[in-house]
Image (cartoon, rainbow, N blue to C red; front, top):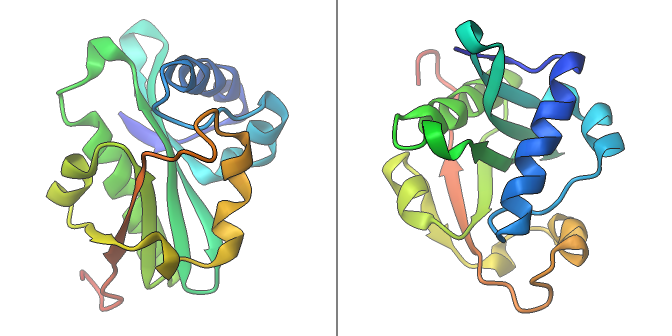
Length: 157
């Protein structure tokens, strides 16, 4: 079940992000930062197990630009469409907020291409986007690519 994150979910979100940060798939996020940004996150909850098995955030960058960040799904729940559902929830919220563009920095562009994102040059993104990069263990040798999703703001678009 996909839903907005709650404060009680933050430690589980942190655990998931820390795990995938160790293997170089996402940027680590401090627990305090996650509490501050909990409203950005959607989670995938497995109610019968009282388990948060996935998370994804929509970070607002500017008046017309958002970022999909920290997409993580527990290994045992991967390949079930949960990641795609989490991204779609973020894109729907972006549309509701009036954002016209959402980007992602990723090491798995094929996944995001299937969801309608297209490759762009990193230089097309504003400089403030790179503030998180200094925390990345790969900095400055980044292997991520930039991708962009353009949102139709028409109802149902």
